[in-house]
Image 1 (cartoon, rainbow over the protein chains, first blue to last red):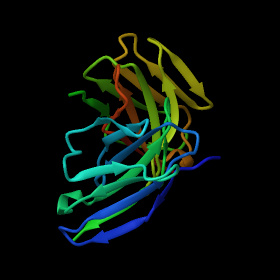
Image 2 (spheres, rainbow over the protein chains, first blue to last red; image 1 turned 90 degrees about the vertical axis):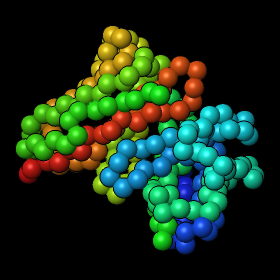
Image 3 (tube, helix red, strand yellow; image 1 turned 90 degrees about the horizontal axis):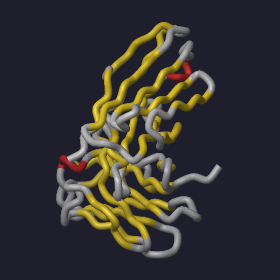
Image 4 (tube, rainbow over the protein chains, first blue to last red; image 1 turned 120 degrees about the vertical axis):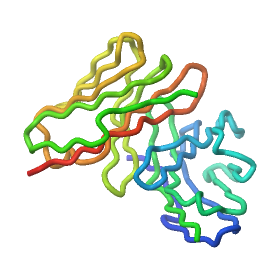
Length: 110
Length: 111
């Protein structure tokens, strides 16, 4: 069964540093998303991406965040100048009418 | 903005008992989806409901979408230990491409 792959599985970073989270969506999917989940809480929408551009973003997705599809397969989330409150599980998803989620990257900002 | 609430937040049931979680949206939805997240895992898609009043079944799971397309429920008959996890509903509005997840119901099973 096709999978969404995320790397790394766990990232620890110093406050103020930049991180890049990577995702390989399912190859024939056109819609891609980033969600995050703070420990024990609900899954929150960050951004959707379609046709090589952002189609929608949440209030959380401010200037600190950016997304890119640098080539035909990868989809990245960059967080500039990380803050303690950015510590969360970040999930990439792809598809429409039922998303396939990756297994996530646990980001810990210290 | 759109809010999606679920009750109960937690449910502990004896193995073999039934379980129901309820989902309410503050706005009318285009569709509602249900996901299951095992402890330490990622959300896994279960089903999508689109039509008003729709009922769908998957083995022991029954999903309903309300007539007003603002609420939904998931009912599990005769729970098993493999049903353990958090069940999230997630609503999609009209003309957008984001899911608003509910607050989730964590199901634990007492063997």
